[in-house]
Length: 325
Ligand code: ADP
Ligand code: TRP
Image (tube, rainbow, N blue to C red):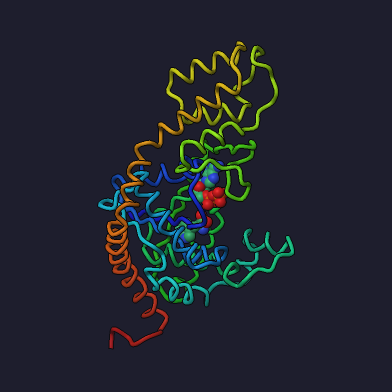
């Protein structure tokens, strides 16, 4: 089965991204033909500095490699290494009603906030549809927030197929397991936009410093506490061993454990959990030529797959020279 997903390079990845997405991408590379790409065309709607964008793209690639995406199993490529994407986006845009895009949340939100919204943000879902349809994807693992984009992708594909014949495969969304909505330092959902993240590859000192900032109530050490409503405990749960978890859970309920102790134990557990990945990352960073080789090989594979589908679409709608004289 062809599994495909894109990740925007818009800053360092945090532990919410890990549990909510990356861990599941790694699992899906087993037994599937997995394509994952770094969505740099999409990031242009928010990142406006060439060096910054190039750095973010490199960072996401090395982060994903370090976290277990295996370039021998998954095709890990950069969206703009396959410029066929933008041609398909144009073909698709000619069958996409304005009304579908006007209801999309990211565009609507910006306009409602009175911010200027560019055409790129408006057309973002069409580009995303091109990303998906270009690779005959069967399954697209995404977070709940991307569900609308997947629906539009299917609608666009159907409209194109109804107009020109069966060109595109209809992809199925695979909404990622959001049981693990990871809370951030302030208790809201961990997100770059709330500035409440612990980044996966923050250095150990920063992780400890950030853990100490996690907001808790002011229940004294000796009083009982409710682990189920405590965001510090929710984070601890993601990293602790079964024994540690049982110990802390018991002492929360009986009283006798302070938040300070849990914060230190959490920081240590996070640092230990990502230590092997941190080492692998350092190794990739020390060998940028290897990262480049992964990127080039993946681009070639992605481009070959993309060309077949783009030619099918061009032929169907009558642009370019016909291949069947
Ligand atoms: P951010 O909110 O930091 O901008 P993105 O929207 O780029 O994160 O998220 C990329 C992926 O990571 C999505 O699949 C999303 O569902 C997942 N994700 C992001 N934050 C969290 C979180 N706090 N808990 C679980 N999953 C998350
Ligand atoms: N829009 C997605 C996000 O912000 C990223 C993305 C771009 C994507 N193209 C895609 C995800 C294609 C899945 C399939 O997270």
